[in-house]
Image: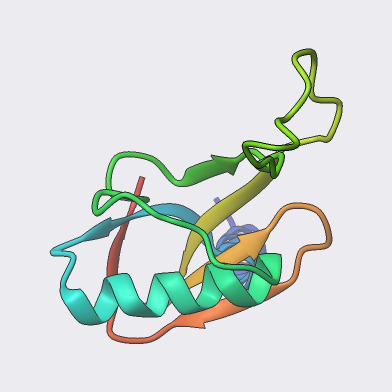
Length: 121
């Protein structure tokens, strides 16, 4: 293989690596702590504009979290039975360098998760 071909292959690999690093890779949270859970809770609240009850193992088994909207109801005015037509919200966790990011699939907005360790899926 000639020097120019090696150079072309090396440049292609470097450009590919830069794109992966810039876009991030799907990830899971590891070694979750109270601080990392609080950071995730804040990011989800900012993304959805409301409080959401998250399980302690959110994003520890998968890089995707799907949240369905709750239909509010009371004893006097219960939620009608039937199909919910609102689309669920899908959130993704990406690893970019050493940082973890929560991505809203609806508009690609992102929040860096402080005090959070993640590993590529």
